Image 1 (cartoon, rainbow, N blue to C red):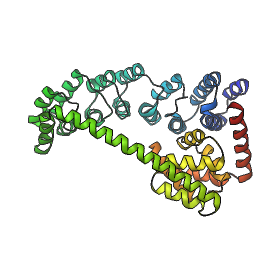
Image 2 (image 1 turned 90 degrees about the horizontal axis):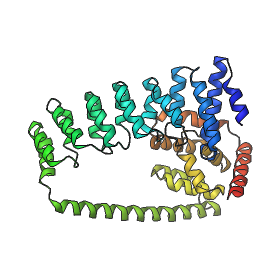
Image 3 (image 1 turned 180 degrees about the vertical axis):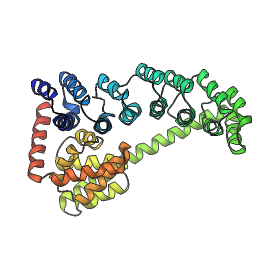
Image 4 (image 1 turned 60 degrees about the vertical axis):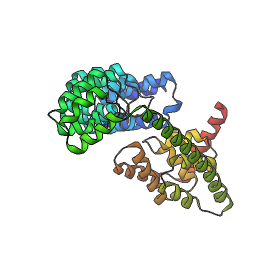
Length: 355
């Protein structure tokens, strides 16, 4: 693989490089969890070279595919993060390969659109938010203040409070934060509208009993979630038994789970019926590339209508535009069952050998 990948990177035709970027990225994404460390390094090198010779639209499409993958090398993630915003945004918002130091550096020197993308990450440390608050303009400040996964230092909260005096929307955003220190909340409250001020005053007035109440709520939520998970697994086992016995069509069972957004239970049903590890099905369900899940579904003869609905649910969970479901469906329509069955047999053998 090493030699062939390096040979691909030396292609000089711009059209061929675009095709190669698509081909190599397919190989990289579809087998991401199985590549060796050496292969991941080579993929990063080859993909990095190919990106230098394709359009910004091609780079943006590639970025959307690999942004959330933990296997994307840090160097490749940084290359994308420093590109034009349409390329950088998915990586800045989702990439687990970027460290806090990387985010601090990017936030310290990039423009407002890049900062806005960083501010939408699921989790942000105080080190990163300090820079966002210091350099960010209104959109960045409001976005990061409304991000409940963002943590702020005392200095960061203080700076947000000071800027809220001239920004009603920012003040309202702060009024929803129950991690806002009381002494800062007391400074913000007077500049808020009546509704936001009342909300913040309630937070200020909360006593130590609230902490226990929150802990009790969290425990109840955990217990409910655990019970729901057990019920879902039991239900999916019944579905599998009904499909195997002919009491229920697989399309009907999947459609029911899709309607309820039960992606975890969908993975269990498909894995059990296809006789492949559930971890594999869950992994490919949560990847933007649809080849892996297409192979499983085509082998099980899932209809194109249901596959399209499943693709739309996956797009929703992956936080990508619904239009991404269209190429997924086209790929599924082009995949014949014999090819899918061969591919799945190979995966079963490989899983058995590794296991």
